[in-house]
Amino acid sequence: ISLIAAALFNNSGWVAPSSYFLGIAAIVISGIILKKTKLFAGDPAPFVIELPEYHLPTVGTVLRSMWERGWSFIKKAGTIILLSSILIWLGSVFGWTGGHFGFNLDMELSDSVLGHLGNALKFIFAPLGFGNSTATVATIMGLVAKEEVVGVFGILDFEGLTKLAGYSFLIFNLLCAPCFAAMGAIRREMNNWKWFGIAIGYQCLFAYVISLIVYQLGLLFTGAVNVVGLIVALILIVCLIYLLARKNKYASETTIVSK
Image 1 (cartoon, one colour):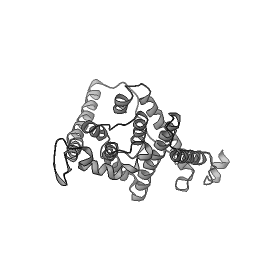
Image 2 (image 1 turned 135 degrees about the vertical axis):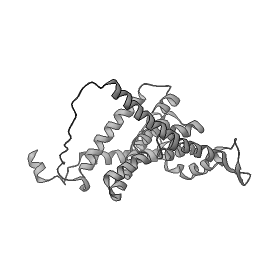
Image 3 (image 1 turned 180 degrees about the horizontal axis):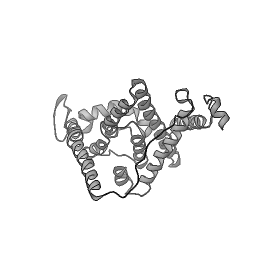
Image 4 (image 1 turned 90 degrees about the horizontal axis):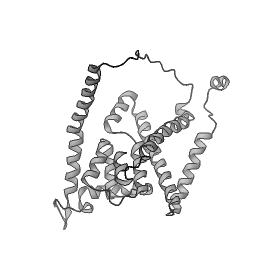
């Protein structure tokens, strides 16, 4: 969020709050939609948790918590993030020049290994506005660790990313599947590959739909409308409204009577 706000929006104050409220809206919308599907039908299960007594923390507790969290990030930065950054740099300086594979510090992105990877997959994100090599690689590396999105742009560049495309990029990476570490936690908690796949797939699909809608409507309001993309966006909006407003046919009789 800070990267996009600083690089594309001149530190505009609305970027972070809009991202925050968009995340809350995504949770509410997803809850309503999923509750009306067969997979999540039924009465809500009670959630019981014992909360500790609230009191002012001691200085020792605060310092210990700061140390544990700080050391955790340092270990992550010195392993996953550092290794990923090295791989990104290597991918940007190794590639094909003159028909031969080799090393070149001045390697053009289009000739590098990263460039070829991005070019092969960028069509997936073209409807979202950031169908270029750099943004595609950043999105993929974001699955390894979200911090690597910043790392990619630190090593490469924004490659002419517009404000609208940048905001669409922000939305997708905000709502899509988390990093590998969080995915591993989800897998352990669910203890089921089927539900794990459904969870990750839903997050990526939902992020793609919302990002596409925002970008295509943005093009409409900026006067650079893409007719095909706009039609698809409008169809998706209608589908979302239907999924939100439709009657829950899987609601149990007990739930209906209690209401």
